[in-house]
Length: 633
Image (cartoon, rainbow, N blue to C red):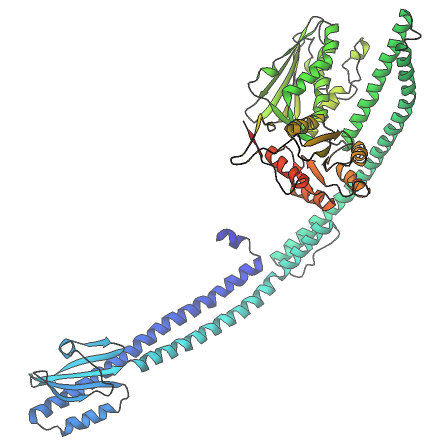
């Protein structure tokens, strides 16, 4: 209740507080005064009945003793004038009737009520049994009964009157509460509306109007002063932003132009050099072949420098596109080792992979391509800056914070404490540019920036003469489980594969691991032929050529994203009727709704749930019969 009250506006709180007073007064008025009136009315009726019975009993006593009933008859006639009188009986000591007035024909158990003391109520009638005594000699009993209808009616009327008064007080209190809450909270509401406008419009030139000199007026004054400071700082930041954007745009344009200008002659240099190297009809001499190899080697080094500079530019400008997914760390390490083994063998460096010693697969959340680039950069450096006949050890483990730590340990010369502070600065090779070790000086910078964009980090432990240990950390991913056996559910049969209809499914995905995963998932489905494309445009061409029954489309792809590719398919006559399902690691509701609004017929999120995946594609391939497969371990 207190939490709900705290969420109410100030005006509502003030209104409720002021309303509480008249509500309390009304409640007291209705309950207290109604109860008092009821007690007073009942008390008066009891007194009246007691006096009436006393008078009649006294008259009856003398009449019975003297056997003169004239005065008793007069008294009884006088009592009958009261419309509330329901019964009047005079009995002798043997409980025999002497005189009875019973207009409503009440049936009474006289033996039970004639000797009761005080007044009592039966069936909404007030009774009193009064002994008839003449000079301490009992002559008989007087029984008197008065209806309570008038009493109850009077009490009800009084309650209605009190209720009307209470409602009037409450209504008046509500009016007063509304008036006062409006007056007292108006400046606060105006300040709130001003704050909302400033927040929604991002316009810090708006000011609240100060009308009072009280605490609210001081608050408005301080609020306007704060807006002055924010507006001044905002203008400064805007100017700085414009300067930075212009500088960044100029840098991007320069790098883009330089890349084009450098790649054009590099294409000819490397192309013709390779033609000379592989020309079997006109083979080169050993001397010529060595010279051509030097040209190719230098050209590749220059091309690597161009690519790394552009990568660094994309990272710094925020235009780098990532496709975050669950990546099997052991598999990726094996792939990276296979690529650098030839370089390590040239210097007889042994690579020891301890990451594959884990009893279960280790998965991280990362962009697979970029993570592979990180591994290759670190492994290449561990080889280049190692000693001949040295070794490299790779380790992979999970820490107490549920993160994955991957370490690359070399037996090189090590790095001093002073150089460790500047190691990740771009183009800083720590005087290695004077040696015969090739490098660009930005590999570690790119590695660090890539890891940070994937919510990771990297650290270095090194001592001169004892080698170096680079450890990078990434969030833990979820294991992708492939079904080992596919079997039908209970009371269901496997779909026939001999004469059943064959379907063609096209999967457009730039990530090779994801393509391989879907291929393995669909390997057990003999009724489905899988086509795959690693680029959006290739997928469009395959769709137009083969016209598949269903298309699975990744959203985040280079060159052309999945939404643009889907729209092109819908605008093409050959493919406009083919259903397209989005397959993406973007699992936010806004991403799903955006894709469905763009025209996708369904949306499958990664990591894939295989039974749901079967069901989803079967809904489009053969909607009359959903999939009957389930995964078993």
